[in-house]
Image (tube, rainbow, N blue to C red; front, side, top):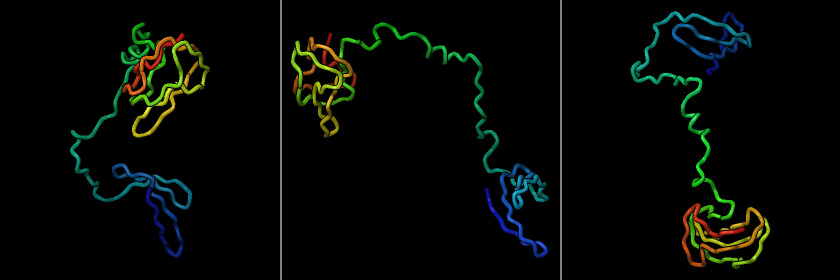
Length: 149
């Protein structure tokens, strides 16, 4: 939006040009909107019409939405009996032992990732059945750290 100040016959006008399409301009003069016709040669764009993107049309009931609503297979569901690594890194310290119980919010282990030490906290209470990532082990994101019950 462009702003202009005009003085016509001694009167001041504050003009805002909102948009111009072809030879019609939508303007606002001292707060009052107007649609005016421009008497000049219409400028053509340098971009060929063939290269101008058209709006994407979508249909109701698009198949992509149906794919997202399918239930997740049993093999891809997260297990309630494991704790997985939230990010890749190297295990620096394990704070729990096999058979030990823990509560939600307890620090289970410390891992180094991106040159920083990160505390891995328990998302729920439980008991450690197996430690899958001992000290010094390098893990990837979503790799199982502990099996719990």
